[in-house]
Amino acid sequence: MSTGIKRIYLLDYGVLSGEMGWFIPDPSVIGERGVSKPATWVDIPVTGALVEHKDGLILIDTGSHPEAQRVWPKSSWDVFPMTKFTDENRLENQLKLIGLKPSDIHFVVFTHLHLDHTGQAYLLKDTGTMFVMHEKELKHALYMIWLGKTGAYVPVDIDNLRGANLNPVSTDYFELLPGVELYLVGGHTPGSMLIKVTTDAGNTYVFTGDFLHLPRELEVENKGWLLGNAEEFLRGIKMLKLWLRRPNVKLVISHDPELWNKYPRAPKYLE
Image (cartoon, rainbow, N blue to C red; front, side, top):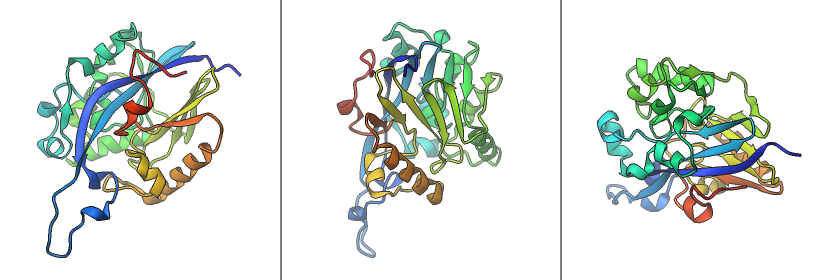
């Protein structure tokens, strides 16, 4: 059955680094009592996707702010510095690779609203683009900022959503367009969503956002300090494993350190 989706382009928004414990518990880095070990850091890509649908162009996540070191709280930058970001990684230049500009985008879907997913949304704020996120995520982001507990929610990024064409989803499941399905999964943040995209070629790609940061989290069914809700996480893991038993279902883990060895960057595409 045709869904109207011919191509999916994966966008390269640079590289972020973090201590391994944020992503997955690693007993090998834990020293004996009273004996510390050096922290193990990992470089992870910051990525998004452009879904070319016959009924509209859908952008999944917008990456980090080009001036992240300036606009992020120092505490966030010290923990998750962007270790690679050049003009090539700007959203407008990633879109240019496939012959598009920000004003061409019909929908932006945020897997969640953390600093490495909403940072360049301001480019689309005044274009009429429909911004889609889960209602729980928007409320949680605002609540945390109002409490002064910003963490991975950056006030500048969230404030840039003010006045945009916001369209929060309030249900656990929502079909945005044929073949583009949004699932509330939580686990990482209260409003984290999985995005399931099925192409005309019969392939299904599941964009995990930060529900999974590393493939090993799926393998061992565990997550590090970035775990928000263990019950939601395990429920989502089991759902993913059931989906992966189906033919032609693939995961796109946006921060997978090996992502670019598994999938091509734009202007190449997935079908």
